Length: 210
Length: 165
Image (tube, rainbow over all chains, first blue to last red; front, side, top):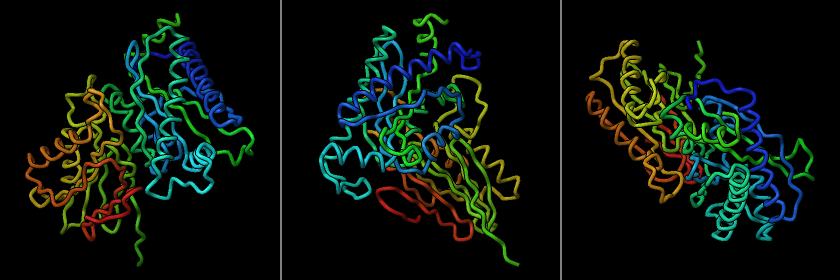
């Protein structure tokens, strides 16, 4: 499907539903993992410029923990689970029972990195298997990679495929946060799903809105 | 009279030119390459944030020339020439081209960092612009800022601190 083709509100609803189902399962998995209530916002589906993409998690220089994997199979694309450092610290402290743990203190322990990697693995796996169940599409995720670095450097990895055909990206963005933390203090994590351009037609077709 | 210094910010797949005392910066370079082309005597510098090596990778008509190494460096040279610099006086410094994630995927786009660096170097040599310094490769993101007064490129990383080349 050509990016210039008009995306209707029905198309957007379908993509939102994908974000909803995927992230809901991811958030449930996280909640189980941490034994903590995790809430999520209604997914946003946006067509944005690359520059705007950099602002979606606080700016290109913001240091985040990023888990990235490629999706292969019936559809292709990139998937990110992005956590602000503060949020990642809280989750990992809880997971490895070490209140002193801090991603800012390098070198980060192998145990913490491994825990983070596994968390990313479980969450993105839940997201994508829910998506696969819902669409009946074969979805094969690659083993996730982990990086603690600037958001811009991390997310641009997922823009390379798209940048060959467009200066814009359609991003399915679902933010998650801890439920029992005051909303103004809550730091949001994000699931970003960036389908490759050719995959939109497939998604719309199987969900009957082509 | 006091001249206040401005930092001109260049976004991903964008470019711009500054004159001293202003500096120019781009942030969050991963596999992308930041290319600074400058004239020491005139204290003018151009910066481009390159995403892809070659405009032939563009599967539709490219609207944004700054996205690619080949079309971008040419366009940046045009901008610099419009400021009155002569190509033979220009020098370059580059940074970026990292691989942020270690993958076994055979997708060529996953090894884009080194290819971007190579393409940038080819373009620079095509225009006979000497590459004075580089900080490329590895697996760290970089934020770079160039000062046309000192011709120094400041590089900030999350894990390896700050350096100047």
